[in-house]
Amino acid sequence: MNRRFLYVLPLVVFGVIAAYFAVGLTKDPSAIPSVLIDTPVPEFALDPIKGRDRGLSSEDLKGEVSLVNIFGSWCFACRVEHPLLMQLKKENAVPVHGIDWRETDPDAGPKWLARFGDPYTLIGDDPESRAAIAFGVTGAPETFVVDKNGVIRYKQVGPITGRIWEETLRPLIEELRRR
Amino acid sequence: MKALFLGLVLCLAAVSAGAVNPDEMLDDPALEARAREISKGLRCLVCQNQSIDDSDADLARDLRVLVRERLAAGDSDGQVIDYVVSRYGDFVLMRPPFKATTYALWLGPALIAGLGVLAVVAFYRRRTAAGARRGTAPPPLTEDEKRRLETLLDDRSR
Image 1: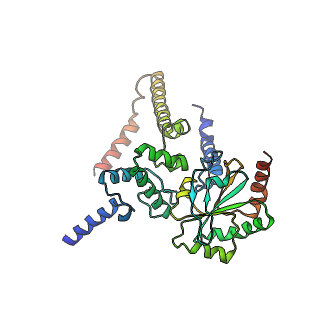
Image 2: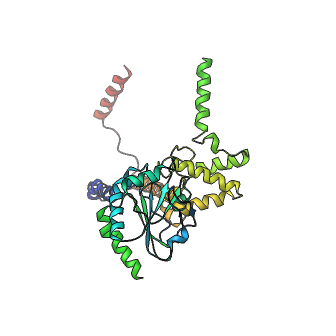
Image 3: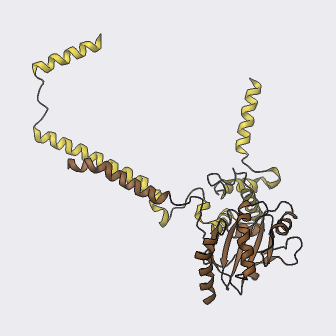
């Protein structure tokens, strides 16, 4: 056996482990890759929330590039994201549809929207996670980019920040519109 | 003593009940048993290290209800699991499936153990080969060494 090799062996082992961690530790273990990317939106039809006449169904997601945003009045991170959604509405950037997820009180969602503003084109009420499970949602907020054929193209887990909007979502939406 | 025993029994009962609430349960015990089995194999997406059968998370509850509804509607166990996997991917399975992307996961440990066995075998082979080359047994102890050995052994027996 080559003795000199034995001396550098610990260094080699360290190098391999360090490289492994260098990659592994930068990954977010709670980010679960979605299997729904590039598949049609699931079949669903949700009732409207209180104070609105129309709910949200899979049919509404065809014809135009849109965002589907999972939110809830109980969800704090949704509040962080909310001003950005209001801004998108003001700029008429893209239709944003909402799925009001797991409200225990049917008044909670409408109250929340009355307080912070309502950026949504259509909203479906999803108290029992019907659509949420069909979309493979693991937490709120989550946002799906749906193209004009009703195919899911992107999933954003967690709040949309200004940077994510500028660098990822807006370019993607523009590209999907050109297709 | 009796109270302690009763307490223990109750603890065990609590463990086996998982997080399933009475109002979620199906009336048909056979269906309910199947639902429990399926739930134990599905990961709670919120807590990740618990099955939906164990988890108190709201999403886990809704998944348990969904599993039961599908069973009640006549789905087979496989169909129920396939539906949830079609929404959340293989990640939702507590036991990863055996397929091309998971070969390293399932076969890796056996492979590494095999390499280890090979390394050990090679090491001993080489040593016996080296021993054979050197002659037979190691050279006998000198008088000095014998004396030292005896003192050492005496020390220990005292």
